[in-house]
Length: 600
Image 1 (cartoon, rainbow, N blue to C red):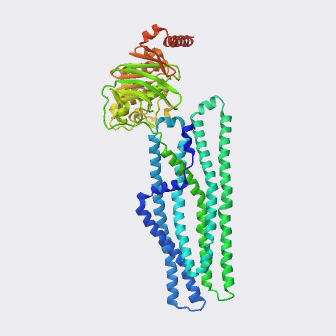
Image 2: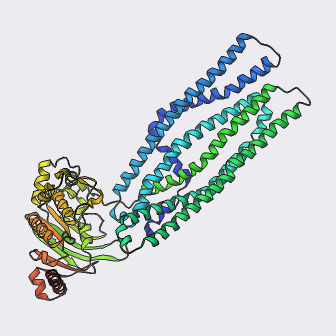
Image 3: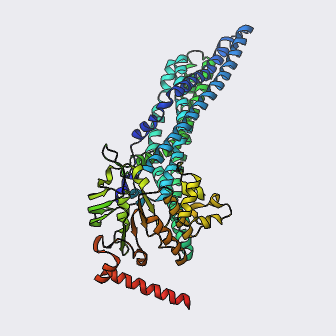
């Protein structure tokens, strides 16, 4: 990950993370209040049970007083308390968990919406697998916080408060002694949080790296197999997986030391304290068996929720670390450029002008230097140059994928920043060298959820770009299923589908990024015919890989290391015998050699 994204790895303060998580609960305050009241009621019913048994032992069993009516009332009361507790705890748990699922659903929508607003400069540098891990794995961990941790913590804290209230009711002195337990438990929790936060942060980061490596390996499997890189990739994957395993193992050892064993030790010490207290007291005064039973029962009930909370501390730590990673992504400010100003200009002609545009991706090295040109309505401008000369950067700035730092880009005389995204994207049609097809069918890939485009418009657009014939030959025509990235279609077919997608929207400006670079000669002929029809009456900017395809361009810019070094028509540039002339001769020689090879 590059330097400007390093802050995405810096942990957020857990207090701030927890506060932001609670903000998501505000819209559900009504149902959470009802669930909380049910929780208090269910907890009170649980706590009152041992007191009824204490009354039965000390007031009826020990003095052998067996009043049937009183015993029946005690028995019925005990059963009613347990049933009431079970019913209230069921509904409060259901409400808490339903609310938790709604909260995490909203969180996932928020983080995905933020990712959609991030600029392409972010996606250029941030690993795709790591991004997927934050949206899926990390939000899943946050869900566990709401579903498995927060409800249990609230329930058990209420229960513990009730236990101490009951203890003070039974014996104030002994209850005060038992309060010593609380600082010891809190100390263990703080110690656990201190060490576990580091281990879980390392685990989450290693999991992101695993996902990133998996994503890269699967997408590049063809190259891996061609160049026999399976062993190397396997070694690298094993190394990252081992680091993830080691982080997990550290957390397991910490859990084994500070969770159940430590709490069990404290519970034994507390039991010894209570029994010692009653033992010493018995030398001077009689011991109430019911009180002893109730205290032992409450101690047992006290440490069970403590154990539950301790066991969920690991989930809590994982969730807090994951939530911090999600919030860091949501706070990232590398947004896509947006409309500026209050006006609402329209693109009517499609005239484009660059004025002294200088641009850098990293803020250090300029990839475009003082670029200026103008394309009038209906004209075709071609951009040529070696790899890295800045051709694609001009397209990226024109499409407003990146914000310019110096200079100005005008469309119909209006700065590009003043146009809305809808106006800009509707009137600028982009066709890439490697078109992207989505999972679905051909009709869906041409329409792309634009309900204003009818089925008839789709067919007309396909006919216009000469895609209709091959689509009709498909088993299901326009309903033919498209797999991931459209890999079952040839590069030429994918390109024609992308042409149809663009022409179905009838843009005023056509932007072509080496649209014929990866297709065969026969398909290129069809595509050139389609391109010629598409360019009529439209302003066109085309990145040209094959110079023979731009002979009829109105104007050609020759770029070298981010600067315009030559410009003119095809004939003028050949007459100058400069860089364009050399490139043309090289390509002509290569094409002749290819032709001779094919004939042989």
